[in-house]
Each structure stands twice: as C-alpha cells, then as structure tokens.
Amino acid sequence: MFKDIRSLGKESVIYGLSTVAARLLNFFLLPFYTHYLIPAEYGVAAALFSYIAFFNILYQYGMDQAYMRHFDEKEKAFPAAFAGVFLGGLVLTVILVLAAAPAAALSGIGAANGRLVVWSALILFTDALSVVPFADLRMEHKAFRYASIRFFTIVLNVLLNIVFISLLGKGVEGIFLANIISSLFALAAVLIPCRRLLRFKIDGGVFRRLAVFALPLVPAGLGSMAVQVIDRPILLHLSGETAVGIYQANYRLGIFMMLVVSMFDQAWRPFFLDRSKKENAPAIFARVLTYFVLAGIWLTLALSFFISDLVKMRVFSTPLIHPAYWPGLGIVPIILWGYLFNGVYINFLAPVILAKKTGSIMTATLTGAAVNIAANFILIPLYGITGAAWATFIAYFAMAAVIYPAGHAAYLVPYEFKRLAALFGAALLLSLPLFMPGLITGRAWFLYRAAALAAFPLGLLAFGFFLPEEKDKARSLAVRLFDPSGV
Image (cartoon, rainbow, N blue to C red):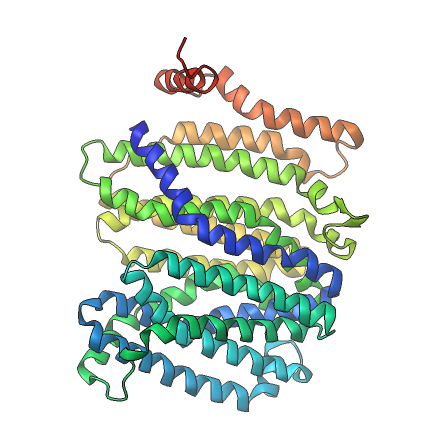
C-alpha cells in the first residue's frame, strides 16, 4: 500500500510541474496589478475574465475531447474538429464584436467598456483555435513541446503585461492586449506543425460523430465553470467593481492550495485506474483520502495563519500586495477550505468513474453550480465578499456530498471517516481564532499560530491517530533520512 501511495505522490509532482510553473508565473502578476490598478479597475478585468471562462466552454464545446476520442481517424478528425471550432468561434466573435457596447452594459462593466468586450472576443477566438492542436500534441505524447509552449506563452503574457501597464500606461486594457498577443503566439506555435492537416474539404460524417460526442460535455463544463467563477459577475451586479477587485485579489491568494489540488487531480485518475484491479484497491483509495486530508489540512492551516504576514511583507519598502486590497484578507481561509473540499470531491470521483456511473458527475457539478448561484444571491447582500467566499465553500462541499453516495452505491470504498472526523475536528478547534478577530493579538498571536501548526501533528500522534504500521514506516523513513548507513 505505501509503495502505491508513494508512487501517487511522485506522479502528482511530475504531472503538475508545468502547470505549477505556469500558474506561479501568472500569480506573480497579482502584486503587480494591485500596485498599478485600483480595485475598481482590477474588478472590471476580473469580471470580464469570468465571462471569458464561461464563453470558452461555448467556443470550444468539447471539440478537443472529441478529437482525442476519435484520434484513430486523425487525418479526417483533425480538420473536422478544427473547422468546427473555427466556424462556431467566428460566429460568436462577430456577434460579440457587433454587440460590444450592449454586451458590456449587460455584463455590468458599463457600455463605455465595450472595447474590452471586443478584446475579450478576440482572446476567446484565438484560444479556441489552439485547443485541437494542443490536443494533438497530447495524443502524440509530445509532452515537452506542449509544456514548453504553455510555459513560454505565460512568460510572454507576464512581460507584455508589465510593458503595457507600467511602461505604456494602458491600464486595464493592457491586460487584454497582452493576452491577445500571447494567445496568438501560442496559436502559431501549435498550428504551424499541424498545417498539413488543415483542409477545406471536411468529412461530414466524421464531424457529426465529433459533435455527438462533444455537445453533451457542454452542460457539465458550464456547471463546473459556474462553481469556479460565477461569484464574480454576481458580486459585480450586487456590490460593484471595487468589491470584485478586492475579492479577486484575495481569492487568488488561495493559489497554493489550488495548485496542490490541481497536481493531485492530474495524477489521481491514472493512479486509481491502474490499480483498480488490485485486491486491496478500495483500502488504498480510502487511505489516499486520509493522507490527502491530513496534508491538505496542515497546509490550509499554515496558509490561513500566515497569509496576512506574507501579503504585508515589504519588498524594497513596498508591501507585496497594496494596502487597498487588505480588507479582503479574511476570505482567504474560507477559499482555502473550499479548495480542500474540492480535493475531497476529486477523491470521491474514483468509485463513480470505476463503476462507469459518470452521469453522477454532471448531477454533482450542476448541483454545485445551483448551490453556488443561490448562496451568492443570499449571502452577498448580507456579508459582501465574505458571503461570496462562503458560497464557494458551500458549493464545493455540496459537490462532495452529492458524489459520495453515488460512488458508495456503485463501488464500495471503506473510507476512514472516524480518522477524517478527528482531522477536521482538530483543525476546527485550532483555527477558531481566525474567525474571531482580536481574540489573540500582538506577539501572542504569532506564538499561537506557530504552536498550533506544531500541535496539529503532535496532538494527532499523542491521541493515537496514527496506526502502528504508519508509525513503523515513519521510524524507518527517519532512520534512512538521518542515518543513511542504517547504523
């Protein structure tokens, strides 16, 4: 069992390296934005990119997944899939460009920002044209080229943001111009090697098969995206651009937990599919969830306790994040816990997928979206951006709650719920001061946080949380670490 779980850990790191590098580079723009854009400007950008996330689903409508499913017909499937994305994207882009001002007004950013809608449409169209060529790289196992293009696209985007905003004074518009140029670079990099596959004559039968496979993916995609970004447009309409800007900046501080969950997600599916035939597979899956929650809770506590210190840390006498955004720091722990429950949901997907009950995934996703929308409309008027954060947490919790019984009925995994309850109970007890500002202050607050982080694993050890075989394995690892000779 330990060998299998160690393998999952290694695979998580390997699968996630390119994603982590790209997202961290993107994260470095956050301090830059907070110092060059006021919260209202950043709020406009955040809201528009939330709409872009939704429209991405419509522009691409699952054609990359359909192409990979029909890769054995590559010579016909590639031009059919690319043409489908091109024509659909062209129609949507023309509509958005012609209706830019009304669309901007309807979105809540104001008709005066119509030009930003035009830039958004161009980003959507360019990115959509890249998805089938990127899928081809994945199917051809050209992982290094795939990761390199993604990485250098982000690098270019970061550099162009700095040029357009700080040197040319383009303000929020600079974000969109940088994205257009970097998206064009990515399109050229992936499309040039595939140019021989582009044809004017499209096989209608192949295209119909692609569409039949792809279109059912759209509702689930929209539901999943709603859980992730619907709060920004709702917050924009209920509280305004400044609230969205402060919310977005602090929401992105949860990136560290999001990256852990993302890395795990990329490795988890091949892991459980490969080991599903083993006799002890259910026990392995159960133990993976326990260890994931154990590590995730400790990381969540660490980030929740010290994110404020990190944000206010001065670099060349300037705080990392501009003080105008500090009022939203209270939402960070809530977002971190939301991401943790997203990881629990991902763990619960294994039984559903192994039993081929994937319809439950759509049910869970749409439930999460509905809960998120309702919770945002109820909680934002009462609690502002804190209400939006709680809506996200509740949505991820609801998804995990819906998917668990579906998997339990189809493929029994003996999850260690007593141990999980102990983990969550200990974490809740230690983190209570976070939700009662002013209870502990000054140096005592720093000492409490450091002591709480140490107390979490030590307390579990003292109260018999760890099993005898886990203690033996820990001792063995300690001996190898501190005394490689084994003496």
